Image 1 (tube, helix red, strand yellow):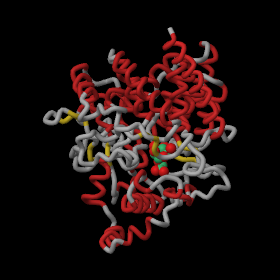
Image 2 (image 1 turned 90 degrees about the horizontal axis):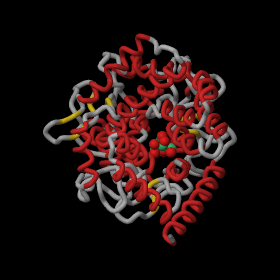
Image 3 (image 1 turned 120 degrees about the vertical axis):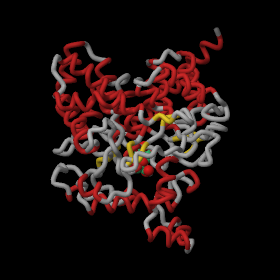
Length: 446
Ligand code: 2M8
């Protein structure tokens, strides 16, 4: 009995603290990820934030989503960032100058790339909190934007109608320095000037000028070489005015990312459910494209290593670096029970994805694994949330509960950090991080 009472009062405390974090980061109609390091609005952050906010104030959660839509381009693209006015966009995110594209909105300044399509999930989660008539009117309000976004994803990012959409910058995955992408970068794609800086060891000097490491220790962020290379990719995209034909003509990155496409499979399923509730049809051309995706996802399975991987769009080679991405087909929900079981086994294995504070963004047996470096080892609560959701739908209730409990324990021990050391549970990255707070609220309230 005492145990139950202690854990109830602990939950109430965490809940109150989580609300304080979200309040601190609230800008009125959107929420920044964290003060200092992340002063703008990010697409998938706002989706996770809305999933938590819906338990506190469903109208505010709707506003969070509507504020994402103000950034939508006229071709349907939803940008990964909308800049907060008066805060220079130069601050470690480079200069996007979204106005170079004829499709960008006039009244807000945005980035020129997207992020994982979590929008449909957030819309449906908000819908769950509404009675049917209100749910219908909520869905009706956002339906045109959502359909336009999915149409854009297929039209622009699946030029050969393969069923998988491609990404042109690692930031589009939200898993910025994740190992399969960084392997490609280091093996073939470092721009000449970055190589020169590396050879002359000048990257160390330039590293001292980085603004992000004023907020977070350098060893917890991506390396300066990677940061410079990503900046270079961004500059090229801007030079081509974010025009996909020009970009693909001579692209650096064109990768059919596993995490992105897994999230897309689930988002498409939500699209069907929203259409059913609204009693409307999904446009036929879009429907034909959507149908290809679950099957195409299976092409990312490698029978030799028994894992899923991202794929190079041009060569069709799988990028065989295991990472947290390898588990996200669980969230997609379209893979067979047998394959789901293989993935679950790797979560159970303490030498792979099962350390003391799971789930690490790189498996422990990967040469990339570093327990403190950003998306190359630390545990993140948003990927845990996606995997927990998938585990539940595959019937792994105990695994899902255990992962939820260890995620909550991380926050009880270490606060609402951006990410955590999977071996020790120590806090890493920014403090008072919004999606950590929002997802904790979702777990406690749901
Ligand atoms: C991180 O990404 C930004 C660039 O978009 C960065 O590297 O500074 C990622 O963790 C991404 O997933 C997240 O949306 C963003 C804001 O929290 O930060």
